[in-house]
Length: 345
Image 1 (spheres, rainbow, N blue to C red):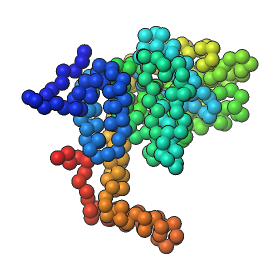
Image 2: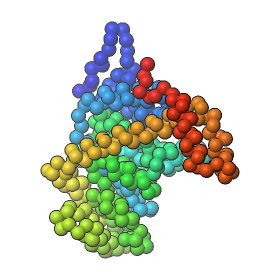
Image 3: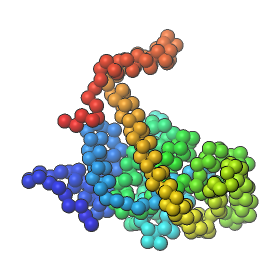
Image 4: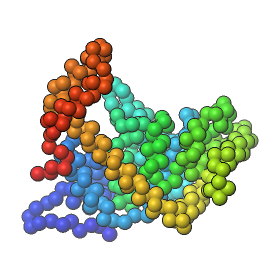
């Protein structure tokens, strides 16, 4: 059901029209909406808040899945393969792939659409690589907002692929319902090669590329990981993440993984954990937005811009400590508080 735009006589609200296009599943409008919520321009942030307020009016039951993995695990190929399987089940699949930003140009450097060829040509899939920018851990600042856009557009499975660099996994785990770890056999010592923190966050684990000569090794790795998961917690009643094997090439195990994802979701719903998890995520999102807006306000304050180059040079020369320079930046900001992003007039 398309949203009926609320207009005053003779006045067209472009944000309302954009929301209507998203609700109708118009791919161009979806892309425009995500571009808007990714923008750091102050005027765009005001429009983005208005847009998201409209989109939130439509309830959604989308399944949110985070996908992380060791280097070379084939995360993008895996997402491409399981996404096609889900579309065959009648699902609409959105992929938000956080693309590492070039330190020189700031642009995306991987281009996930080229590694998800089958999904890229499907009318029931939407792929959006987002440059990670300067946000901690390489996670795009607007990934959460992009999730709201694609869910409002009717995509009922949202896959968020991490960059796989430290804190990005923590950030993505904090915005999804199920966190999936994709790993490999024969990648050195697979237990030593995976940080304990990632294992603790994982809701489901799959040993990928379990085909051909690798199939037996994958099953061995899965057994070892299963044992490792038992050692992580001493509570015998605690839920232990299932460890499965899969192959993006043959499709083996992909439907078992989807069944495990649905089982995990049912477990969360039956225990009240899904609502509690999403409530905590909303709280954390609030403070993340506060951090982002404050940082951007500091950077954009004209008095800070004037001082910035000189202070940076003094820190690099060793004539001023980083602590002293940071204090001067904050003092200058406090004395020259700009209009905040809350001031919409």
